[in-house]
Amino acid sequence: MHVRSLRRLCAALALSAATLAGAQTAQEHVHAHGAHVMGFDLARTIHLFQMTEDGGVQQVIVRGDAVDADLVGHIQHHLSMEAGAFQSGDFSDPAKLHGQSMPGLRELQANAPKIEVTYKPLPNGAEIRFRSSDIHLITAVHRWFGAQLSEHGADARAL
Image 1 (tube, helix red, strand yellow):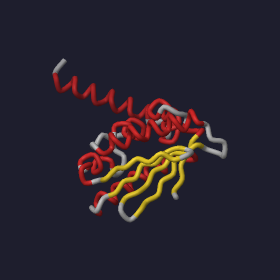
Image 2 (cartoon, helix red, strand yellow):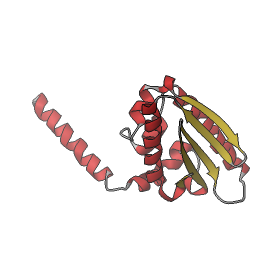
Image 3 (cartoon, one colour):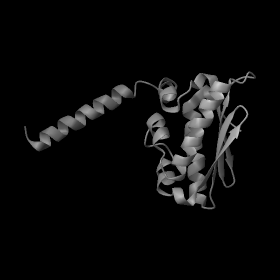
Image 4 (cartoon, helix red, strand yellow):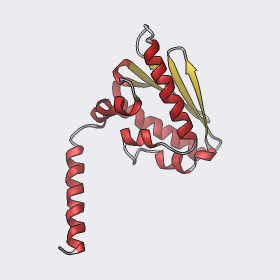
């Protein structure tokens, strides 16, 4: 088989796989794979996104009034690790869950040194704050938050 034919076959197989994978909605994919990427059940948490003038704040908190200390610990560990990864430009976990073509993701990855990322534990979860003075990066954070809000569905809301 010629190299060109082999490349065409590979491209056709990749397109077929993408089409089959596309049969699942983005929200279904996030719900099905979220626990694997984050280490906790999304149905037991709520993701809150607040777009600010200098970036934004993302919180993950326990759903409801009863605070599950074990779940809070998992949330805090995950967000602490993510904040460190984000500061160095590693957005691989959100990309695994939402896809590499998430709005704003490439800009955040490429310009991580221009974004201040801070972690803060909360009594019922944790938060990550993103700050920048670069309007393009602030817009990238807002676009990235919007994509997450859309794909997390009922497990997320804007503040």
